[in-house]
Length: 92
View (spheres, rainbow, N blue to C red):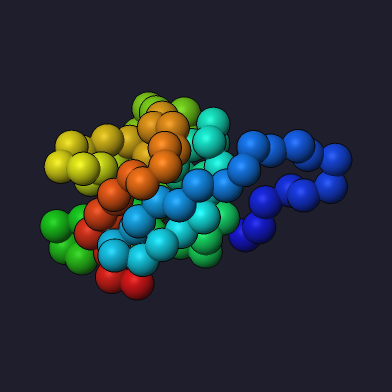
């Protein structure tokens, strides 16, 4: 998945770290949007090991929960900030 580029003005990109890798993101976008734009589809795994990713994208379902600097947060309701350290619980 890529971001819409035509006719869109954005601030300068920032860098977030996701599972030890640098990922470009834009201030003001949700963490879920940044992760999806980077090609990630799974953000966590269930107890049985099944991959899970965003479902509702509005903060109701908790399928996109990730760890941000030691706190468990929903990626779809968390705004990106420069230097953010994110752990998904899903390798790669």
